[in-house]
Image (cartoon, rainbow, N blue to C red; front, side, top):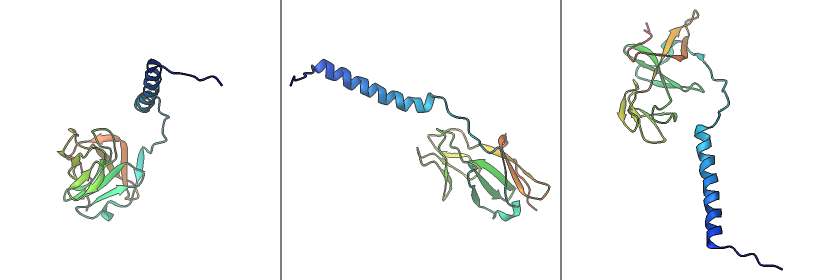
Length: 148
């Protein structure tokens, strides 16, 4: 049986090629083509009065939170403005589990690395009195749906 020998240069080339393939695979996830999603554009939820004053309620599958304060009801996106992770509720508002950014309930940044606030989404009332969130339309931070 013939013995195969490798030089250090061949071993180095092989390990560099393997490392390059691993890096390219990781970069491909960020830069490559992504399949279009069947993302929900509008969500119809419960009546606005169902949300407790001072509460933040996650919308299942909606990537947003419904918040009610003294001014009314509003929707804030759950997508962190740093790198797009989904934020979770914490004792003071929202926290990004990926890199530690923290936000107030109104979406304002309290701790980076994120520098932009969470976007507010348009909310309205349907003819049946239900809360509707338009995931495609951002609105001013001060905009609320008044709850009577």
